[in-house]
Image (cartoon, rainbow, N blue to C red; front, top):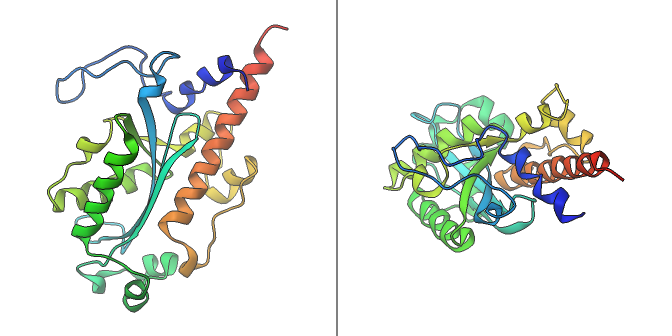
Length: 233
């Protein structure tokens, strides 16, 4: 792809954002959103989590898959961590049907305490972000954001210390390209991506985030192709 096409891709990832600096909720000024000159300062923190239920005030994260990329979808690094919940008995049957959580199985696969999981996430973020402003990106962004916020806060860290105050969700990007059925099994094939596994024991945070990144790359490629087609010849 030509560089001129790539520079337009930031519009997809940041379609909800203005192009000039604006006050953040805490009153501080943030740098401008990516242009050809500034886009290297930003990255996407693709995240997918599995939990014991839907309520972050009661249920807990049991794993997290993280893949950090630049705005073109090129991978910067990845982390997968299984987490031993403090209250495994609180798992809902709906959650178990999705992720197949079993305490003995989690333990045998090297699950760690919440505190250790947070330590690994913070260490990964420091190493891989390498000074970039990372924008939290997920499929169900509200869900993943709430659980990540709760986990970090429980162990003395803050979501906003890691990620930009804007959050991106991949289905909205697909919607902007004319896809109105936003189920993963529908969106994925539209970009040549096989649906994520539905086998509970194989459905983990890393399979979820790998699917998300693959779809994002498909969105990027489609946008680049449209940009090239629109250029005068």
